[in-house]
Amino acid sequence: MSFDLLAPHYRWMEALCAGGQLQRCRTALLAGISAPQQVLVYGEGNGRFLVELCRRFPTAQVTVVEASAVMIELARVRLRREGIADTQVEFIHADALTWQPAEAAAFDLVVTCFFLDCFRKDQLQQLVPFIATAAAAGAQWLHADFQIAPAGVRRVCSRMIVGMLYAFFRWATRLPAHELVDVVPYLRAAGFTRWERREFLFGLLFCECWKR
Ligand SMILES: C[S@@+](CC[C@H](N)C(=O)[O-])C[C@H]1O[C@@H](n2cnc3c(N)ncnc32)[C@H](O)[C@@H]1O
Image (cartoon, rainbow, N blue to C red):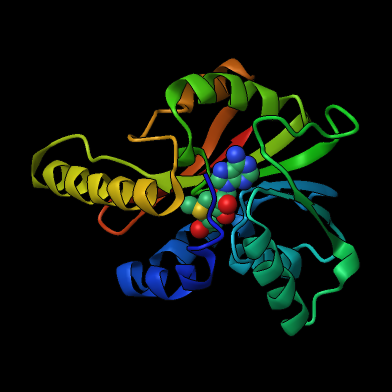
């Protein structure tokens, strides 16, 4: 799996498919998050969320775990262009399935925006508790993703759109996942409780804040 080939096209494809809705979804709950000191961001991509995170919390130290070297370079360039200090963000070019922080329970904010949808159910069963070991007591977890509507025309449309997205990403990146998996049971089992949720694009996108 690699997003390297797709990375240079990710921005315009996002704009074409969703306008500003994905970015609205990623950043909608930032205002309600208590200022973190140590943030762990998984699968950041090209840095658009990262810029907003760093602007809102200029004293936070941010660690980004990202498997695509091209995405990391795009995010670095974007941060520089936006005048955000290199020292605020540490990029780790690694596979989230195996990377472990040097210290357990060190992060007070975890971010997974449109990242957990990259994994199969059997991988998420391991990955979510694995990520949770990096989160401190009282940590917040900002999560955003796609969802299938529960019923009606919206269900038909969302299934079709999500199905097409998986077909495309599996072809373009060799993504292992082929369907959305509900991660709520894994977050709950890891001791997190949901305290805020919003939806975008007729309910196709959601963002949530969880707290331990
Ligand atoms: C669908 S993109 C989402 C990017 C961005 N977070 C967003 O909101 O659009 C998934 C990102 O996660 C990264 N990624 C996928 N699998 C990964 C893994 N196993 N370890 C680390 N990063 C991974 C990809 O390189 C890509 O940048």
